[in-house]
Length: 216
Length: 216
Image (cartoon, rainbow over all chains, first blue to last red; front, side, top):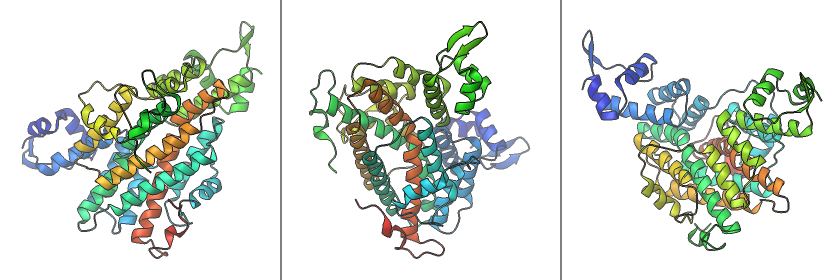
């Protein structure tokens, strides 16, 4: 199909597609004349991935890095996950309390050398941000966070398909990055359900709201 | 203290403090002359909250709304949570499959009327983004997300202090918004631990990594 067809199928405007081509996010089509190129299903799929990343708040530069790990994946799924995380985790040049973050993630089974230092620095950055706001997470709540993310991660990693490298790459890269807004959105709903349960809400009595809630 | 002292205590530059004053994020100091004002501990605390929100990626406009709910809190903690969520949840004008999102969050105990429609729309938007990238979350993994956020939310809502309205406000508003980067950062570490456990990592054998992991 021509670029106009690609635009029609994906809903992405022609100028935006041209921008992605210039930025190296989308690979070139097959030239059929000096001014025209032919695009295929691969372009449609890739364009959807690019849109999804950008819609999720991933920057152009980060999207380019994620896309590169789709095109040129490392050998092992563990390295691939590291590459996907590195693409979307900024390097923090500031002074952070890495030791406190390491102590916390030890409760997740973390050991030195096990993961990208920037990922642990991300935890340190988040803790610093809370501390600066004079906000401390109660112990019970922190324990709930650790259990929850451990449970999420186990299910996610168990779900990685290994029969096809291509499927594994898509699953790891997109699952890790694109799912973040879903988890945060679900948490907000769950908070409102739990707060209705504890405090009541107009037209509902406390205790009735979470009757249908998921069992642990 | 003068504005220079406020800057020294908080590490926020004088021009930035003046910008926050103009934007209505920080309340004015007590005028001591036509060109000088006096600032106190309340300004220090507020400035830390503003910095923490902005550092967490919350926009100036959203920060202003969060700050307003700190200054003028609704009566019930449930309404307060709704106000905090509304401040940081965009209103999506686009066409979304709200019914699919509602069906999903029913598994969290959601019922019609229980929470801000924009919060459920946030779930619909996240699902749409995944669908557009041709990525589907496996059933087991989705169940893990639902259980995890339900567990998180229960611990968080149980932790809301009710003896002081001020403490409740800070806890709900900041806990809901500022903790998001922490949860995402912890998830990345947990994913790397689980992937090292499943696939091994240079210098460690599979199976040894998560030995110290949290028990469910």
